[in-house]
Structures are given as structure tokens and as C-alpha cells.
Image (cartoon, rainbow, N blue to C red):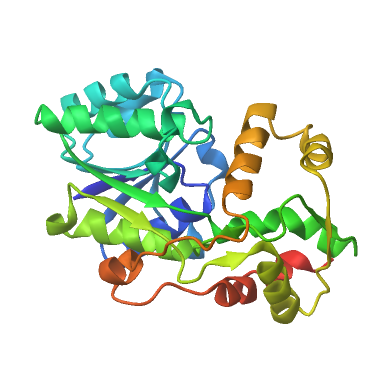
Length: 285
């Protein structure tokens, strides 16, 4: 079996490369910039250019591939699926998002691309072209890295909804869940909601970061308008509005949790404290 891992420069993709290689699975690392790939542990694996927004890359990337770990890029998903079928791909595991489960997912700029790819995969599976598995993680624990610059500089983190809950999931748990569905045929063809093991507010996450890193992580409440202005240079307004709406809807409301990580991997999901300990250096000057 050969597995194509798209987005191999990402934290989930790079971790998945190591898991597959360590299990003796032939793996091909794909990225729009393959020269910049740094496989974990310096392992020697095949690399290929695959920009999911450029169909010219698809045939070479998919040649001889049995399974694909796919990021949710919707721009040419129908072409990608047609080329995958022609190449004989049997299974695609999609890194989707729990945001697709929201009633307004089709109109939500964060959820829409994930939902479009899910629907395209479901249609391909219904035609018998490929088996499709959807991994739907909630909030990545790595989102906390957005606070690292303020914490390293000794400044308070600006929070428009300090009491908003999230379900931070360790990227290694997502990678291990992907490994499970890619290597266990019985797990194919389903959708899996992945959450961390705890529902934590932003203020609780900052307190955990302080304890785990030894760095003070204070916060200051700001208005939604102030926060939007502070991030306008790198977050499009529509995405900022979607995030603010989500945070407002979960302010003071714990997030429902799933046990899917344990069901797929055989161990409980890693806590946010474990994630903070693993990434403590990112919060030090």
C-alpha cells in the first residue's frame, strides 16, 4: 500500500508521515513546496509537489497511490477525485472540521470549504469511485500558538470572549486517528468527530500555559471591534466575524466532547496540559 499525504509540511501531516513510515507503510509526502519538507526524525521518504489548487500536479502525485490523506481544498476537488479514480486510488481520508456540523455550515466561510469537499467525496463514494472517511476535529490546541508572541513579549493576550469554551485537541491525536483509518480497512467509510478530552475556556487555557511553561500569560478583555482591528492585517473580515460569532455562542457554554480519539487510537486524548508541556519552548523568548 502507498499513501499520499497532502499538506505534509503541516503539524498533522508531518506527524502522520512518521507514524506511517514507522509502521512500514510506503508513504509519499506531498506539498506545494516539497523542497522545504523536513520529514520527522530525518526519515527518507518519497516527496512530490502537489498544490491542491493546481490540477497540473495531480497525476504525478497520485501515480501508484492506494490511499490519500487529503486537506480540504475545494477549488479543484472534482478534478482531483477524477484523477484519483483514474489512478486507482481506493480510499481518501479527509481532514475536515467539526464546523461542518453547524446548521449554517454552507454559509460559514470557515466551514464552507470543508463541507464542499465532504459533499464531493460523499458523491464519489456513492458512485463507487472511492471509499471516503471524514475526520472532523474541533479546535486544534495549536491555535494557542497565536498567543505566543504576546506571552513572549510580556504583554497580555487580548480576548473578546474570555469565557468562551473550546475542545483543544493535540495534533498528534488527530494524526494517530488518521493513521488508524488509513491502516484499518474496517474503519473506512465513516465520519469521526474528534475533540480533546476537556472543554476549556480561553482563560483556563492561559492558566494552564502559565503553569506548564513558567511564563505569565495574562489577558485583557477587548471588544469584538477592537479585536477585529488588531487582526485585520492577517485575518479576512469574514473569517474574523465567523470566529467572533462562534466564540460568542460558546461563551459560558461547555463544548460537547466525544470519545472518538480513544475509540480510534486505543488511548485517551491528550490533555491541553500535555500539549502545553510539549510546546513550552514556543512561549519562551
